[in-house]
Length: 293
Ligand code: G4P
Image 1: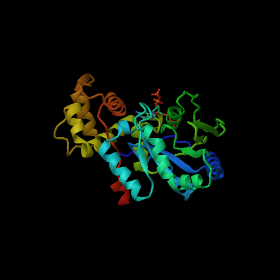
Image 2: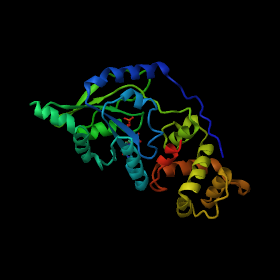
Image 3: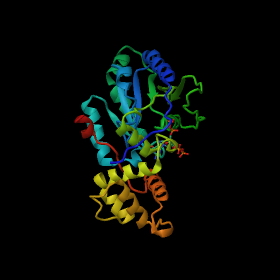
Image 4: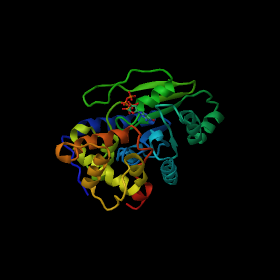
């Protein structure tokens, strides 16, 4: 099994502390927290401290990028989260698919509160929601979809100061777009691998060939039909990462002089094709792995 080394991942513990404090300070202003996850890596795309930070506040998971995830696995994850008492909604904020179900899901999540408000005559009091998620998970895409107008993209970059802002949605909803950076768990090898496959960890800090070998090992085990249909690979069950990458490159005719495979080119092609969805819809982790520790 190949090992992935992550170079120069920069930690900004001070920045994380600031974000953590900001979330804590604003929790009392909202009725619920909407945590956006990447449906391809629902667990690895979460900030590990989120459960603790959110406490008892009602929460909804938005499984974004569901268009790129395996639909059967997305259903499994939804069932898994439901068991934990957190409803999850699959969405594709790029095309807008599923986003129309958001308001209904929030009304259901907050049904008791809404009923109480109605009984107390508080009609029209806006529902306030905090939107959180790791960088690149689709927070801006979601808020823009809901706001139905393009707002300027502001990068979640350490050092770039942004103030929190409320975004009005329809007549009775307000979204609190939280600035600040919530990192995932880079220091866990399995998590880091998945984040690198999806591009959440920048390619500049990982070795692309190692990354491709790891992805091929995963695909050979979990989605073998992909390698057969896309790269016409056969009899690869016993192969390790190096052999898988060479076979894939050879099948694609990526050769250099002497008949050797250009493994760098093969690796770049594989990662590109995976990320652009050419290999099909896939999910890179299962709830069972997490249930079984
Ligand atoms: P952030 O605010 O959390 O940092 O994320 P942002 O919305 O900027 O989205 C990050 C990238 O993910 C964007 O791609 C965006 O288009 C893409 N994206 C967001 N939601 C979805 C989704 O549901 N499905 C798919 N397939 N992609 C999604 P980009 O390459 O950075 O920009 P661009 O392609 O939009 O130009």
